[in-house]
Amino acid sequence: MKTFDELYRDILKRKLSLQEPLPEEYNPEHLDCLIHPEEYAPVIRVAECECNAYDRACANSCVFDAIEESEDGEMYINPELCAGCEACIHACKNGSLTASRDILPAMKTVREAEGPAYVLVAPAFFGQFSDTVTPGKLRTAFKALGFEGMVEVALFADVLTLKEALEFDRHVKHIGDYQLTSCCCPVWIALIRKIYRELMPHVPGAVSPMIACGRMIKKLHPNAVTVFVGPCIAKKKEAREPDVSDAIDYVLTFQEVRDIFEAADIHPEQLKDDKKEHASKAGRLYARTGGVSLAVAEMAEQLCPERAMKVKAEQANGTKECMQMIQRIKNGETEANFFEGMGCVGGCVGGPKAILDKEEGTKYVDDYAENSPFGTPLENPYVRKFLEDLGIHTVEELIEDKMLVRDF
Image 1: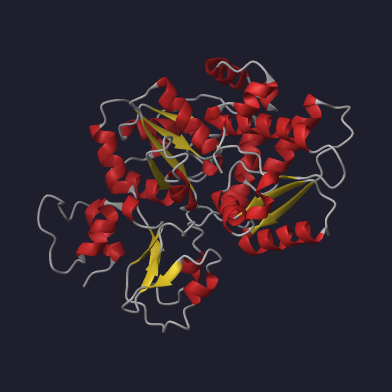
Image 2 (image 1 turned 90 degrees about the vertical axis):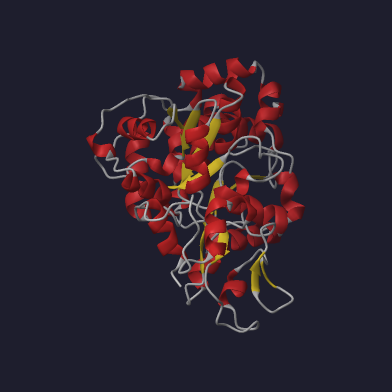
């Protein structure tokens, strides 16, 4: 029997036709996972589990208790509980687990779409497809795949930076007050929502930049198809959350996009540069640990330089560090008032489906941010245009606008 990965590769290389019966050497359940990924958890089981029920490293690694045992004793990943952090994949020594793939339904929908299809790239994208692939060349490559255009989600990180700074100004007024940043990492938010629910009053109800971007595109083009591209599979789960499922149709990882380019024989480095600049330094820094804190701190200072309570930030990398930081908050062992959690070490650049290692990815992100034509969201004319299009003219409207608010 061929493996899940072999089936995936053979379909991409067009060695198999989905219009014909699946040969016996392939597992039909694997094909169902590829065709209907939305019916499965972001992590799927692709081989028999050789561990007994009491010695499963995968289950022991899952802080969300998403790995359960069925009535027949088989390991089962609960799609409702799995956050897509991939800890179980790394813990499994037998290779029985892998990340889901959304390529087949995503590209089929793009090809058959009645409206325009847009790809939304995460702030961590810069440099991922080689140092000679500029954002403009990547945009051209996506157009060659059938997309109408490419949008930098960092622009919407700018908008959320402004919102978070205003939330900080509104809610953190005394020593002991604090804010848990809510913007970007779905694993961090899942930790708070599912394990530390009592801390939710400290989380502003803000959507992630991905959701804000998808919603804006669908407001401008109601029949548009939106495909987010980033370094983690946790975004696949976030896109399916009931209160934000109106924004993103599919999530692909950087590695999945690389596979698509290879299968379609598209070489981004050889294409023309369709250059556009939409995001500030602040939004682009969201891709690495400390970026959100720095962006919000600078924004808060710019909005209200005379304010007595300044942003004093603390960050954590990975679920273990995040949980330790939360425990310090609960124990009163920190003087910080703004806490940034990232589910991956290094932040998004350390995502499990990034192509570069986190050190190299961080360098590319920092360089890209430094070369931005705008320093902060207030200096970015596209932020002002976005807010005008939403009809937002006051602080209250920005904080409470339904497009930017989650129902936690």
